[in-house]
Amino acid sequence: MCKFRLLVIAMITGAMMVFGFLGAANAQSASLDLSQVLYRFENRALSLGKFGSVAVFQGNLFAQAASCSGKQAGAYGAVDGIVGAKTRQAIIDLQPCLNPSVRAAVGAENYGAITVGLWRLLMPADMPPPDVIERANHLTFALEGTDYDVIQFNFCQSENPRSQKTFLEGDPYCHTNDPRAYMTWGPRGATAGAGAEVQQIIFAAERANPGLLQKAFGPFTEDMHRLALGNNDAAFDVLCAIWVNDAERSEFSRRFSAYGARPEVQEAYRRVYDAANADGGKIARFFKLYNAVKQDIGRDPSEIDLAFFIDRATHGSVPPGDIGPLVEKMRAFVNRTRNVPSPGELRKQLAAWLPSHHKYNDRLARDAIFLVDDPEVVVSDAHRRMWLQRSGLKASDFGLSDYRYVASYPVASPTGYEKIEKFYTVLPKDKRACPATVRRARK
Image 1 (cartoon, rainbow, N blue to C red):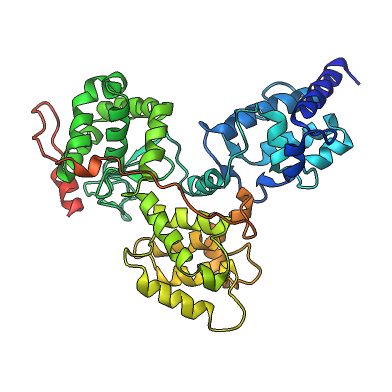
Image 2 (cartoon, helix red, strand yellow; image 1 turned 180 degrees about the horizontal axis):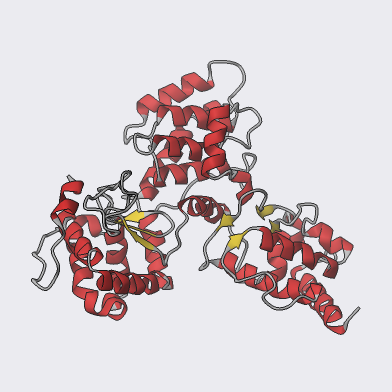
């Protein structure tokens, strides 16, 4: 065995000793289920983002696996936060450098999975394994498919079926499947349209970090101020004027990408979505609903329930402010027989009571992610085909279970954006006006 491999084994074994993997001296480690799966790639890769702790884990894993297997540095490709075939192969390649007891402790039987034990082995103590809330959010992240440094203008983005071209590609007409979302940004699909999540995030980040917009956007600073403080008409005019100018669109996108990559902006992004006047409040309604029927179902929401709540808050219908009628429906459904419905059966029924009127089939396909792990749930062939075509992901791919429970969700206070008076200002004359055909498509 070559020297560098012996060195790797010594380093890994030493790390195991530090974290209490060998021997029974460390009671805290002994109390943990080190083989618990955090993320598992089976048929579809999990896109978890290149800015979070998973990307750090992936970098550490690739370095150790390459050394252990004698492969070249970079053999597993770039660190991208995508848990797929290359991450699974790296985990497999690392196994020969672990003795049998260590392999058993970190869950070697979970073929190529990222487990609690493997995470603790490769990560510093101040970066604990992702908790259930983070992993539930990662599921929605994987479905949205965009990272913090990615924006997409939604003006006329659809092709004309006749010419198979978009407006920017030369078609004279503007086709869009979402005329109220002028721009989309990041892992939760924040929009700068009717929802104004983009404006709220910009407002929160600037309030916490004064001068950040000037530093990040330079010549676009005034545009960003108009966007953050303006009304819906202002957002349309500002963004359309940038979008329609090729040079400005390219430079703005570059600057926004760098802005979204900043940790303080990502913190503001998460803060806005956890707020009581945003998705945090929607998620809280689900918890209020389940708390009202807790005596009937005998449990708190499960981990998969939590992921279902978060994804529904992001993309779909949620319980109304007055949950009374829905509580009565749930109680009647739960108590209709002596057998309490399984968590999946209850989610399936709840989804039927809260149909989505926007992108209906896509919502059905997303709902299936939270049903296929439950053996008590019958998913129709048509529903299963929608699911496989949309993602083929399962909640268990993210280490989520219906046998572990979550009592509450940490809802943040409102950001303050809702209290400011929105205004409209006419764009400077040097800004190109938004084409009339684009304006008509908005109506």
